[in-house]
Amino acid sequence: MIYNASMTYPKKTYAYNHGPIPFRFFQSVERFHVEEIPLRPATGRGDWLLLKILKRDLSTWRLLNILKAATGASDREIGYAGLKDKAATAIQYLTLPARYDRGLKNLATERIELLESRRTRGPIRPGELRGNRFKIFLDRIESKEKQRLIDTADTVGRGGFANYFGYQRFGDDGRAWEQGREIAHSGKRLKGAKERLLVAAWQSHLFNGWLSQRLRAGEIIDRHSKEEAARILGWPVNLCAALQKQKQPFKLLHGELLRSSVGGRLINSKNPEHDAESFRRRRLVPTGLLSGAKVWRARGDARHLEEPWDDSELGSLPGDRRDAWVWPEAFRTEADPSRSDGLWLEFTLPPGAYATTLLEEISRTPLAPQKKRQR
Image (cartoon, rainbow, N blue to C red; front, side):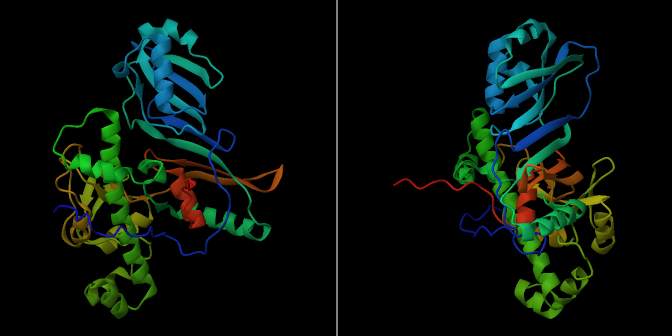
């Protein structure tokens, strides 16, 4: 089926039902720290260099340009696992052929520090990360709300959160997906990284819409009787009754595609109630569709809810299955001795998960910066 462009994009549904918690968040080099955790350490041997670079107030794209100018390496010769925000202090790993070693002495600037350079046997590919470690400062927290924020953060840290794409994915105005949709439906081959990012924003928009509707359905199941939930959703009463036995916010359906935590293989759910227990134990996680070429689709009831958010014409990018739920690791909160209204959050997320999505779940408030209106 082709996605219906007139379909209303649902308001983001949060997984937890606590009231909003106000605080101030904005990204800066002082308040937002992120460090990549490489999938594999350097081997100490090989024809490539694994670089550990600290950057401040610098986008990954700008870092790549500086690295090319310093060493003479080409775009294709520089490897990186992911993109890091400009407004942050970030430690990032990159690779380039060892023959460019001499140019690294020209790399140091006020915003770039080469922390380590070691030989390794191959380049980093996109997505080859074990995760990202974050340390984020929040402030303007009312004294009466501070303990509630800490308790809620602990709850979300232990229970996990819905793996929405963050607002950064959709451009400054939040509408990059519209351009991506036009490009995806044009039938032409993609030209360059910018067009690929725009089409990826369209994929992400569809995924977020699907995930929000799935959580909204779970919310209705939990808040109403099986008869009332069936009436609101237009689902069979016996299905709603079965789903009420599942206690997690994201309810599993027959035909769900689940990813195993051991080995990462995809499993088609034939017994949702049984699989829900494995989900709660972090052994299985439901996945959502990223429309594109050569991708597995869900079946049965799960496919019925997935299909409206599937763009079958999108073939310019490969499709994928994205985890619908994510659990942060090593989650902790720490008071700031210099600010009674401030709090540091530290946690590790898997590749592709957004720290800002976690913060939005805690606050139950959109955190995307609001563009000032021009007079």
